[in-house]
Length: 410
Image 1: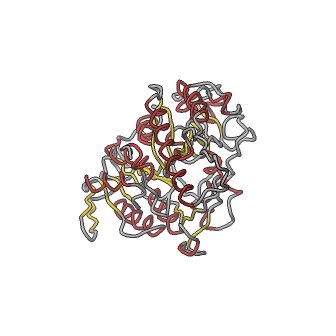
Image 2: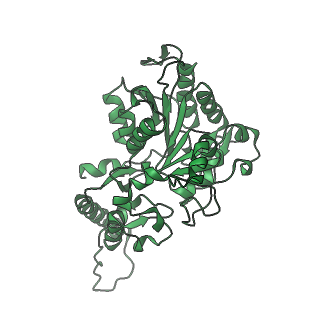
Image 3: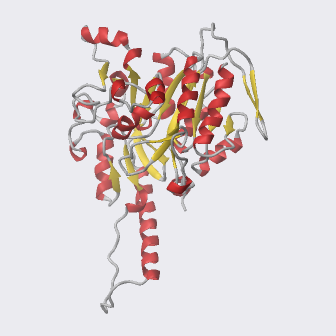
């Protein structure tokens, strides 16, 4: 198998995934957390320092978890079931995770949720996600802020500044794209924990979005069908469809997601004697042939990507994104332009391929809830000083890592 596909075909080990995060942490002392096989040391700054620390976290597999079977999933009331994703996946988050994330922010740290998720799934799950200082979706292509944190934006909007747009307006989250609207905080589930700690209505940073336009085209075309959109990203979409790939564009506006196994032109199998249906062996051979065809077609597609596009793997799929996006690039943008905090004072939580660059850029290390791909496992084992790996699984892994962070913030 070509090296580029080893991470793609590696499964998520039957569990988890969906929002990494990074944190700006304000920590009052040097904290040493003793783990069974290593010691984690976080050297931090005090609250009065100009540079607090920030935590960036992934969602799926990091804060929000999928389980292979319902029998393996923790039950209520300690764990909440989130609305299904657009592909029908069911995820869970623990109430303790929400409380711990709130404790991180209460310490003075900045919390940012970072995900490859699509807009509609993000909006539907927003009432169940921790309150954060910023939210990043589509692998770094879109950035949102809580309305209460952007009071100056409203004043700027009144003076004609179009740098932000409210994601809970009647026009939808894409500034008229017809997307589902972000819910107001009052419309969240009536659970007191959610009311106290869950996310609220958001506004999008359109200045960040504009930096993607050389690859994605303008945001004004979000309401147009993907096949009619202009820009290199949509040229690749059309090429992938022509090669037989199944391409997911459902409420994706700065990326596309390709299912590799579906690609490649499949030659019709000859059956000159008309013997009827194929047997199990023939079906297996045809499936293997199709996978090889998909791999070859994908390699060709990736080799011809325009210079302002790149790809990442996630959930065994290939995401095509603007070169300027990426979780690590969005983190650098937020640290520099929005929070004025160096990445040297940041830590992250994650679990999958698309979290590695972010994890490696964090000055305060990376907390891994699970190995959702072989590449994450290799990265963690290759740099144990940078990566701290949870001993628990599922929602308990989220809680384990957050407790370390809360202790470091105390």
